[in-house]
Image (cartoon, rainbow, N blue to C red; front, side):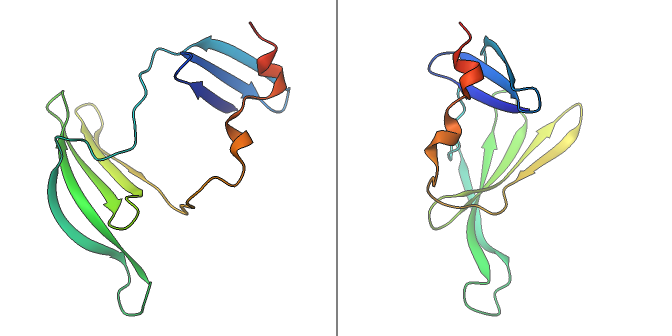
Amino acid sequence: MMEFLLFQESIQYQFYPHSRTCVKSDLHTPFQPIAIPSNATFLTQMYIGGTSGPQEGVLVNIWSVETGHGNPSIIIFSAFGCLPMSVNYYCKEKGWIVESTYGITTGISDPTVFIPPAACSQLN
């Protein structure tokens, strides 16, 4: 399944490539930008990966963020380019949850990947 979230239109499409079918529904989730929040506190800067040779590691900035629910979060962004590397947040029901990003490529080589397939555009 592929999911297309159109926040400005409050619509989401779920496209099933195997059957070439699409399901349209209302989107009630607000857009969450991937950014360092204004209430974040800088903790430290460090390298992720090796440092024995040039360009082996990635210099990152580590930030602490208090969510509105009182649960702590740790976010890690690259020092150069401010690329998201990891988000670590605490959930009372599950404990610490870690989301990491690998294989980041800057830029968009094919912006049409954000356009829902024709099967979805036929839905009203």
